[in-house]
Amino acid sequence: MTQALQIISNEHRNMWQLSVVLDDLCKQLVKGDEKPDAELFGMIFDYIEQYIERVHEPKEETHLYQAVLRRSSEGREMIARFQLEHAETPAAVARLRNQLGILMQNHPQGVAEFREVVDRYLSLLRQHIMKEESELFPLARRTLTDTDWDAINSAFADSSDPQFGDESRAEFRVLLSRIVNQAPEPIGFGLREALPEPDAHPVLLSVQDLSSHYGRIQALRGVTLEVRQGQLVALVGANGAGKTTLLRAISGVQRVSGGAIGFAGHDITYMRPDQRVRLGICQVPEGRQVFGPLSVEDNLRLGAYTRCDKKAIEDDLEQMYAMFPILKQKFRQAAGTLSGGQQQMLAMARALMGRPKLLLLDEPSMGLAPLLIQEIFNAIISLREHGKTVFLVEQNAQAALTIADRAYVIETGETVLSGTGSELLNNEQVKSAYLGI
Ligand SMILES: Nc1ncnc2c1ncn2[C@@H]1O[C@H](COP(=O)(O)OP(=O)(O)O)[C@@H](O)[C@H]1O
Ligand SMILES: [Mg+2]
Image (cartoon, rainbow, N blue to C red; front, side):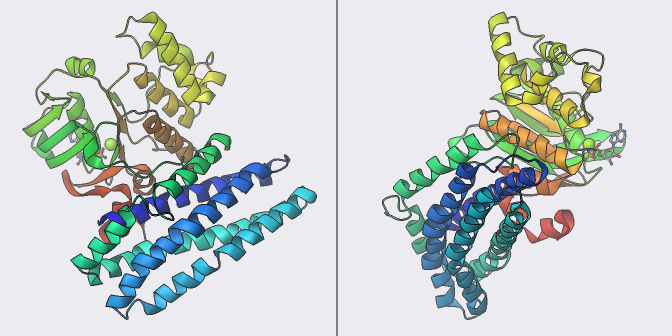
């Protein structure tokens, strides 16, 4: 993908995540009887105004829309519609602010109406984003020339531009982080900055043309992928595609029949599992497997069994409680009494207590209700925000691709596609095979 489309797509992702926060806030309003947090809503509306309306939209219009219009008449109608939608943003924000004002005066009567106005805005925003990515992007890729892209990319990269450059970015970044800090937990998919340059991170795990058999059945037939430090990388694929087998091969409990696995500069293809653990690979197996009769805290301490730095273990325990507040609430309870989602969090936290360099997660969303799935994915995002490197294996392609920096698709034991999370979310093949679109 070109740099400019990548930037737009990342911005879309931030907007989408913001829309999830707004949605969650409304849901809480409907459920609870607390007055709305007017300041937080106000900041979100500010963000829409300052960033979406003032930076994102004009940038797209000036550079991308105009270039497409110059090259092809095919997009004329679509772009006119997009421009109209952009032009309506100020009125939409005014409606949101107005309705919030009414709600503040008239709480809780105004909740349903406020919700309606927010819903209408969110559905337009989301449709707009999806249409741009599924219709405008492909048209731009088809019709624009290399010279066009050079011009667009350099406009997007111009950090001194008063409107699109570093300064305005810094401004919205501050606003965004204030929204995130003030949003109640757990909420949304978490918000994050545009992706750092992929090459800025050293490769931690590399899998090269890996194959593996169960007797005569070949479960892996050419898996190639890499995970860079600090990244959240997802592998998505159907049931039976070979995801668990791959994780077991990386952990060293599944024999490899060809190819190679490298980790942190070592060739670990034939290394013993315990040595891999010592190097910093830790797998959270499918189906969680916490120690049911033991307390939450004892489970966590067990995760640190290879360590003897007592003070640091206590610090890490606190860090886990900060990252997963629900575990702190239940630290004395038997792990077996936790819900499925909470057990999944415990299993992740326990793995982190060993201070792994790489966390392998096998289908953490399996068997969980949609709301819990979102909670688990929030937790995974927060891992990444704490600088952990995560390799996530999932059948739930939509959720995994939404949060992944990079992703791979595995089909019958073979990696067949790769790209950034948003590239794959927008990939036609992925859409029809995994997203049901
Ligand atoms: N213990 C086993 N013995 C024989 N075949 C297995 C075994 N485990 C998995 N397989 C086969 O290997 C393939 C990949 O399985 P698996 O890695 O569990 O897939 P996924 O985790 O993607 O659902 C499947 O065809 C499955 O039937
Ligand atoms: Mg599996």
